[in-house]
Length: 341
Image (cartoon, rainbow, N blue to C red; front, side, top):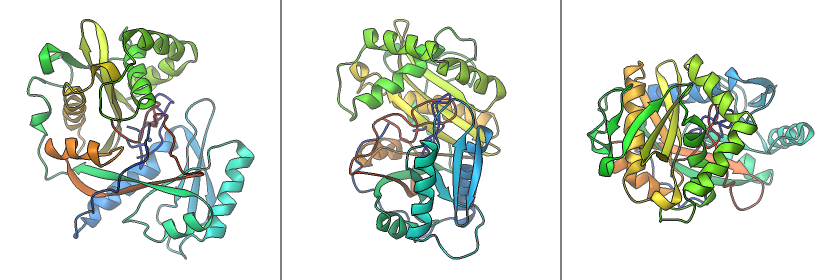
């Protein structure tokens, strides 16, 4: 759910990074209610992940019950969230206003991200301080859950090519893969045309965006994260063109799938499921016991539930105004982030 930084564009935390995958957003339909009995250990593991992910490329400013993450150097701007392990009084509207003032001073987005079930009192404080809260279903594959095989039976392992829907190949990209920038560009276009219906952006627009991501250093920053093992990028290719892509950003035994997006002109072919399956397989092979994501809305969440993810909680993102950002939020290696499309 995080607004993570795809390659500094963003990993995902209630990103997203998320999904910082990880994350573009549309005004979300009400999230499906979380199960009555939450697994406290799993909730704490995800909470710890959200706190840890930004620390690889951001400093933390302490505001008592809230922490503000400030990106170091170029890259995706981060957000504020509840301070991990805080045992004092809950955040008030005045605490939120203080953080917002600091965000404005630093030229950062006035954004807050958190899990509703972990910090249920924060929403009232945030809304009293003048921000609009958007809900995103948070889904999980925990240690007890299997692999979502329905995503694409053709995936062999985390390294080799595999056969995806309609003969499309799916692979996890190395840092020096020539298609890296193109794959990274796909979610940018996907989140620029929100929704699940077939859209207009296609290969021509993709080529332009890929060149832009090379020129501004985003693709290079992602390559550095891949080399360091902080981000994995998977993509589906057809006729030599990247059609869908997404990433996961591991921290210990937890990882978030973020910024999964399909080229608008290639939608409704099951590509997002195939890419997500590749990311899950790669994460599991790398030792991840918990894989989670925050969906853009309930329509998207239904797709992932059918494939094996289960509803777990609700990711909340607070921003000024009434409409959430449509830019991808993924965090560490991607720009797109907090949701999946």
